[in-house]
Length: 485
Image 1 (cartoon, rainbow, N blue to C red):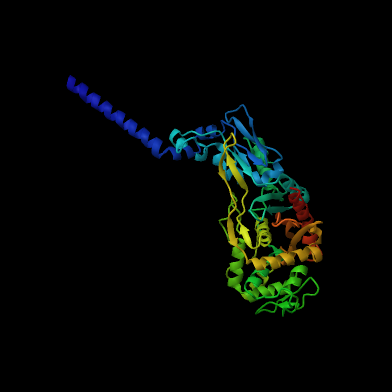
Image 2: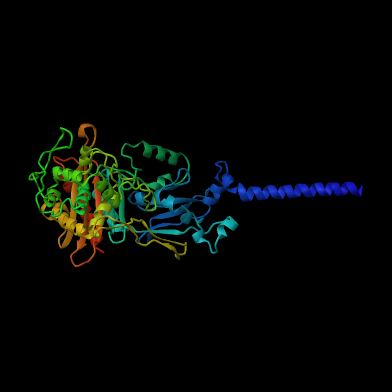
């Protein structure tokens, strides 16, 4: 009898060990898979059982939370949602997260190890802390100036502090209210369907996720390449460029909209925006030189994050000479985000040193203690300091004596470049109006701001008037807001 009891006890012990081993296997090796299983609502319930941390502009939170009284206890709210949607993104119980809400989700939801009192605390306890806060680099007055300037038209504005890379404004219009997507139920589903079906694409972040042909605004990159390569040694000397210009190895004639482009100097070509001179200079620099310079400004970088991912701006690396000529004036396959073109203006303003753009200044615990601080860092040496000084002078001439006069600010040194990019079949679509610029107080040793503006539906009679008439006033308003302190 005792022998059978011992056997039964041994069997029970074996079964107990098997249960413990299985439990350990599930907890240690399958926990993540089970957490990620769509059928497991415990993770979703836990995610929304405490308030989410906030996103701040300056000292003010532009997000919040409200109690729902339902199983998912807290729902995201937004202050001035359409104004800040290109910065915050949305945090939806139904559709997930985007932009800062996504890139900094660990901080905002309280799961990031940075918020834990001890290393590996969250991993050991499988718990989380109160949601932390994300403090952005955005300046409210500049954000509002950009948003008001676009007036709901399809377009975008990106503004940088050239000496640091801080993103001071990031606006995309038409916009949307992310709070309409926060919860669950039919109202959220209907809002999602309506927003995605809209022809104006309000959920598209045009400032960082949409690329456009940059048109004549790209001529600043070509000018930098020509000066650095010593293709041009004197910006005020005449070039040997005819007007019109026959594209290399073709019979295609490239005309000039502006007058006075026959054998114009580089400085004059920038001031009045001569297509022929800049296309010819791009060919003389050569494909390798143009690709290298464009890369120094940020083109062809598919890994740029601010911390949200930024669409890749393109400058083709394999082209014939006629294609290179068109690419050098911002046509053919050359495309850029507004943020990319703000980087071009910032590099010129900052003496050729392009700083890495960033949108998050610091992250804190819920009680306000800083756990991560973002500092300035160099992205690339976009051009030599001497080239930057010459381009600064040329861009100032554009504003003071050329196509960018609508961006002038009394008592402030302003440099700019207009541009219009044709698009559509046979260029039948309304042109995109561009203006890139920078501003520096005359009693200051450093530039205050660099701005890029694109307006998609800007009708114009000729190329750069559209950029100067539609986009330059918006850039001026943003620069004025930056200069107010």
